[in-house]
Image (cartoon, rainbow, N blue to C red; front, side, top):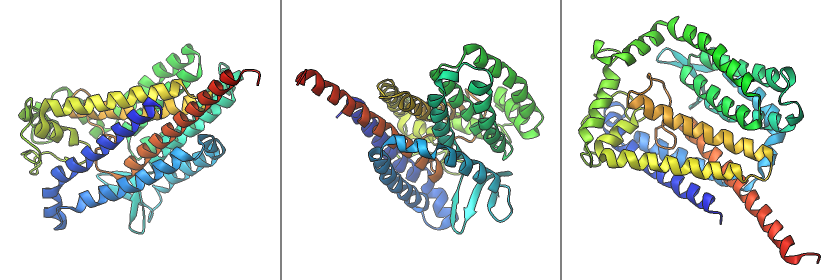
Length: 376
């Protein structure tokens, strides 16, 4: 078996295991208080993880080229689901944001599905249109305009964090596909005033930026969460307070089992624990990049690059937010934070990476057989 595949399987298994343990550690008290069941979040996460592993196995076995036939339907489905969020009776509002669809007792975030759908669509479009990739209209504006519609639907939910993440992933895909650097730089510069307007014309987003610059201006209000996150990280020291010994999870740190679970990891497992998490993500990125580099075709290369970019940027942003390096955004830590939608999309992405690696290995074996057999 290819070393990149082995590394990927081991790392994802470790991250999932750490996630399950830390979700129970961070959520047991909160779940017991609110649901009279300290295992409430643990049982949900384990169920999502088992479903995810099953899906990963399926996508690891089914030829990834099959996704090319679904690229347009997936894109249309993504757009439809994002619109459905705003329809009364389907969309569910929480914290002032309409990011969830609720059907019966099932709830999920369409924006998570959008991440995967856009990667599949762009990988197919860019691979098929290599001859026109450097043309301004057909090679650049056409795919950008289609993608932009989905990004607009995400940002008005509102979900700026996911919108920024999508922008970064799309930038990587266009760069890997060979898009003109001048086009990419122009779009990046043109997006800055739009980003500025989106942030500073919204009171709560403007407040987040100002508090990011100085959380101590409002330590009991908008600066409370990041201050509590710092307290958690600093309390852990080098070796941590010990598993399940966190003090900040006692209703001090909001969203402890979701977006800020890395803080509790730092408190309970210390600097060593946080560095171990960083090392696991680094190995995942390196293994994913190797798979992308060795992909048997351009479509596989772009698909793998998009998936690796999605997971790595999400991890970077989450850890950056928790440590106060970036302003607060609602992005979970891949494979570790509580949440079914995000977990399933990331695990399916890993399944696709394993499939691409499998095809790369089989192609190398065929070449080796031909070279050994020679003219026979």
